[in-house]
Amino acid sequence: MMTESTPKKLVELKDLQLYFNKGKANEVRAIDHVTFDIYEGEVFGLVGESGSGKTTIGRTILKLHEPTAGEILFNGEDVTHLKGKHLSEFRKDSQMIFQDPQASLNGRMKVRDIIAEGIDINKLAKNKTERNAKVQELLKLVGLNEDHATRYPHEFSGGQRQRIGIARALAVDPKFIIADEPISALDVSIQAQVVNLMKELQTKHSLTYLFIAHDLSMVKYISDRIGVMHWGKLLEIGSADAVYNHPLHPYTKSLLSAIPVPDPEVESLRQHVAYDTTIETDGKDRQMIEVNPGHFVLATAEEAATYKSQQI
Ligand SMILES: Nc1ncnc2c1ncn2[C@@H]1O[C@H](COP(=O)(O)OP(=O)(O)OP(=O)(O)O)[C@@H](O)[C@H]1O
Image (cartoon, rainbow, N blue to C red; front, side, top):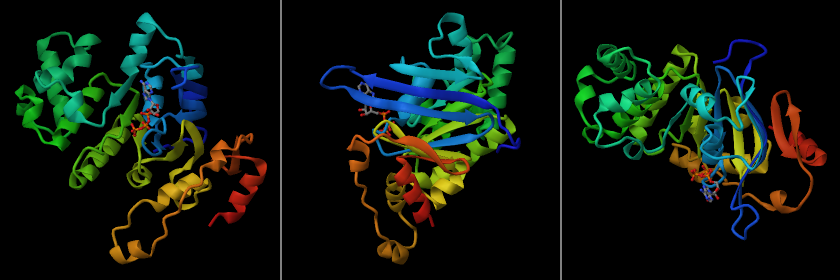
């Protein structure tokens, strides 16, 4: 959680664009003029349906894609075109936790070696004893046992595998973690455990998270602020409370109305709000407008005024 009144920006995206197959018939504007900051020590939740561009944003920040245009700053430094040694240093500071721990952990490697990969690459242990000690410490940190070190990923449950993925990310003592749908492949019963662990580790290690998910319910719980994406554009950004309880953009309202409510009676009475996409295709010029302090929406001036007046 943030404590300072004027938080420091850790990640800044400035008018970022990433077009796949640019100029061709199958061009996809996966990131379409996106601007936002992630403050040091916060959890920034990025939500939107499948294909909205969330993963591409995460991968572009980590420099797994070269942006078509725009800038990415990390800790005040322009990292958009980093190469060589500087890129390796940046990669140590920024780690990723993936959706499917089954696919992202090498099945032929022992857990110890999976977790120690970053330690080895970055030469963070003086010798084997120190390497093993670090692995033991990480296993404990994520709620696994010492004797898990010599086992293979297939011997674990989905939740435990995700804990291994978290330990691997933490091994290099990063500042920033991108968690790309880290719980969507897990059983509902263990999703909360993994989210709680991530939250606990974030506080303990003063980490900054970009938490990517397609539904708002868990994101609301873990995030300080939330950004809502659709078709490569950022449509709304604000505190988790503002976006969840006082949404502005029709897309956000529609997304919220799609979250099932546990009570079947309440659920049967709820209206799912349909989303009219014309608002994104009519060619009008829209800017991010601050409707309430810290709460922005992509809109024309007229729309912003209407959204404000409609706010509950
Ligand atoms: N390598 C690629 N080449 C071409 N198009 C791509 C590539 N990667 C992603 N896309 C397209 O870019 C758009 C954004 O995809 P992205 O995976 O970022 O969305 P997402 O919101 O993360 O969705 P999901 O939740 O399914 O991962 C989609 O239309 C996708 O098909």
